[in-house]
Length: 389
Ligand SMILES: Cc1ncc(COP(=O)(O)O)c(C=O)c1O
Image (cartoon, protein in one colour):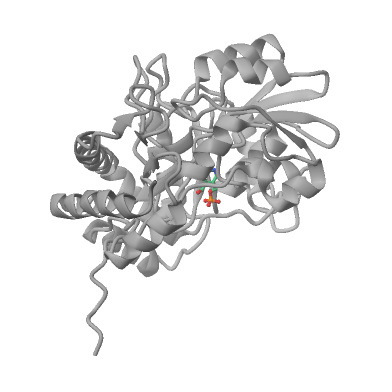
């Protein structure tokens, strides 16, 4: 018989008896959709962020889609966004026939460079869609200023960054402009699948709650569908998991930060490893440290492998050693559907493309043990030895 797989997984949600208790509460109540748990989750989330409104939906992608619609972005308009992101932050524009206009990212934070964003704003630009990539806050104060000066809409993709703070110390999602969050199982807070939109605008929140529910009026009269809507509802069971997770959010964020700290210590001890912005950019580049008031919310722990390392071989080598790792993540402009539609080509956004070619996500979750982190780091050093010339 083959032994059970004792490998170290990439991610694992942290679920407790509290989630079970609240899920059971929902099941015993018999109310499975649009009930009190949804309201409790939304209220708790809004209070936690200190923002007026939080509207829960079925995924981060659904949140982004409703955000695009709420800002009125439509066919013929352009929105400036990051090529280095999860594909949903650009796909949400395509759903409404809006053209994504990419600009390159900052080599240290891997977030949109405001100077590069400014340069691609043109007559057809309707807005900005920055992404807080890998949990590091985008340059929101500068981008919000650009948006205000140019009368542009602003939708922040904070799907990877719940708990992060921007350069002015403001928690991501609480500035008042529309921001989206995601609750897939590897996120800082999970509901299995799920998402949230935050906004300071109560009327907008009413519209979002209607659009997530087939355009129905808030009083739920059966035949009233005031506008085009979708089924983007979050179930009561999902909301129950969210409520329980929210209660422990600070604890879980602190555990993630501790794990990241341990990785940082061990990997910086390798003579070719250093945090982004501090060492050889062609070496092993670790996630950048927080700058000024900015605070990363740790989502994944992804390193840029040394230039010249064979990433696929490193992943295979790590797998042999029982360590799950994943290439992370392709530049959006080079995906086939984007190339075919917009004619993007290799070389347009070199910093994003370099990050895409070199990033590797290592096992990262709050409950990972220190010995497991040691094992991962040792395995990575070994794998690099064999697959880097
Ligand atoms: C940056 C970013 N945007 C959007 C999403 C989409 O969220 P979901 O998978 O919940 O639709 C994700 C999810 O991984 C993400 O990382």
